[in-house]
Length: 163
Image 1 (cartoon, rainbow, N blue to C red):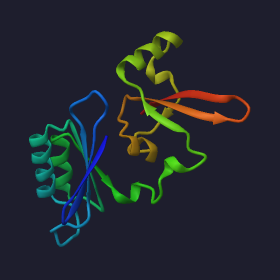
Image 2 (image 1 turned 90 degrees about the vertical axis):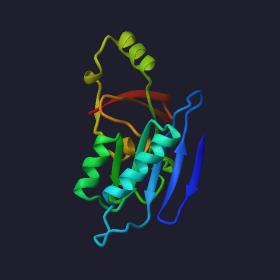
Image 3 (image 1 turned 135 degrees about the vertical axis):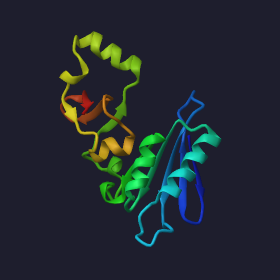
């Protein structure tokens, strides 16, 4: 489920999974109050308060750039910062050549390891700063399930370890 809330300086997107109470808040910052144009520590603190009041488990802020103190404050408060230039200007998931990507839950990871007798690091790897990893919220140690449609093989499923 996705919900949107727009304010003067930013827009919030709240994403929750079925069956889970806690969600993720994604804040896109349009403008800041700093003369440098960077997202400052006050913006991070407001986000922290919003997360605490609504019981969000994770926060993501997207902005043009971040001050050093804002980056440090975000790390302490489980808020991820993403510079706008990292995110593609189009929806990569609507492109024909980009397959479906999903993050495996803990159970799925255990089943995969049991089925193939492997440790996660033995899988092919994808970087945590890859645009797809960022867009779906994958973090270090996650395993992605990638489902490709093929004219010859039908459906091909592969797995990648986020490194």
